[in-house]
Image (tube, rainbow, N blue to C red; front, side, top):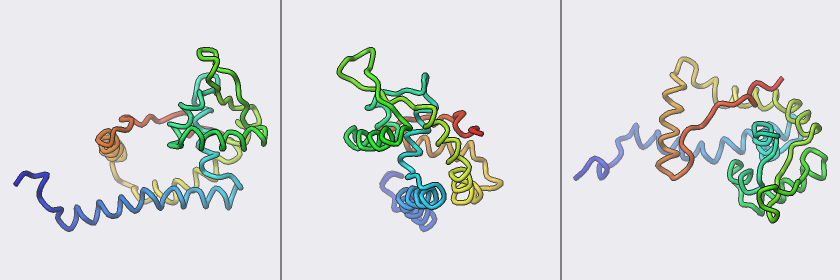
Length: 165
């Protein structure tokens, strides 16, 4: 029997089950916090954040969908709502006339800045504060390895969005 075939020990089983539950519970909790405090769904915040981090505050709809972990049709609905609110606009893609870009407006950037403190408090309270004294760099590397094993992007980059003031 290989190491991969060995049953999980109680600590491994507990860790895996907690992590699996966290994957679904955490986004719901962060969403509830943002909705309560800012009346802004987490998916809208994520869309604005990813656009703010992109050159020209612009991304192809398909790239934005991938970053937000949504289907293209799901992203289209989110962008439509944000566009209606004046936070995002659509622009024709220069490289492909069939494609469309989502572009963060100045109002969208202002809304992101407004919502950032509430999101920051939620992330600290629900996640970061529970890891005080831990080597977060090593934990991030382990989580990135799990992402890679799932066929997802490896390195998760720290960005300037978390310095919005």
